Length: 457
Image (cartoon, rainbow, N blue to C red; front, top):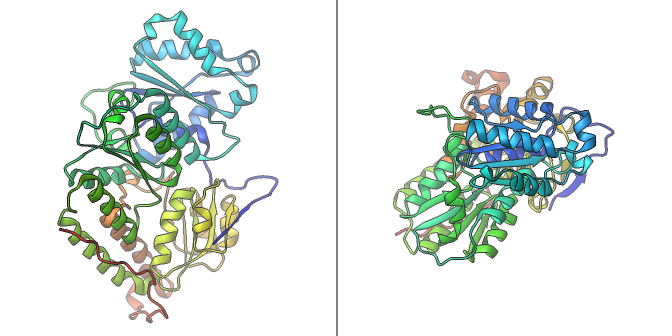
């Protein structure tokens, strides 16, 4: 078991973590016809807007209450009111979702009370859902904000328990999943004859499509009616430990059984996922997944020659850190350094002596002598200084194309991840001259995890 430590430096140097408010904002972007709003200064919103535009390379709907020095002291009721009225008149959203920032949290604005007063004053807002979530950016991190937003959405929008009446499975994806990951999960569920209702669904809103018509709100994602009807499902599947609280709230509200999967990257993890779907639906696992499973096994056999004994430094949000770290460990690599952004029960389960909640400076100092550095794009300078290969993972990834289309879940996604990382090792063998390397020496051990064959009809 790993020991979880906190960095006690006086200042963060080259931050690894991103704040709760933009985590919540991204979750709201997975809702159809939604306008996310940050209750804070224009600068706070501009930062998040630029971050998302550079990562997804798409038009990002994100508004602000534009707090300044005076309104911060006197209170933000008028700013919230003006923002909501302007958004409704110009963009016509079905839901306006507001996330707080450190500025307004420090002041202590009663946003819930303000929304009640605004509704009384503006009856034209009766058909617009207004949602507020508290996400101070001086506390916790990106995945916490995402989880809080989804939990609050379920608590306020979902209709209480109704009998399961549809061939529907709810999916609560963590913030570490890409739009391509979500689409893969939907396809797997569809193979069992079920419809996946994903909340929030970035694969519908930020999957890189060109819309037929322009709109000021999100273009695609989960409709509000689908969120209300989550109680019609036969099961809820939460992907990532960060979604456990949302799954618990949904189960209590609708009586729909929930299952939490810490990761969907890896052979054993996907065996369990498919076995759960088979049990929930009463149908055998489709034959095509036997082929995909066999392909993954072959990829693991091909790749372990290059992973064995490699020292890897990881920096990511807890759920992504766990998914990547466990797969690399199963492939025979050693996690030499692990740095993350916030607390999680998963951190203690990582195969490393210590997990540090710190920044990219901490990661760089611990990555000395490693064979690979894995983190988001802000770690590229550290990799250059260390003169070691760099693999981009997580958000933001702004110096490469196709961040939203990277697939690392399911049998196929796991196979692709092994190839991507393995190819980096091959490329950098013998000082970056791949045509000069012989067949690598056989590692002293093979992956020790035993994977029993999945029973497939």
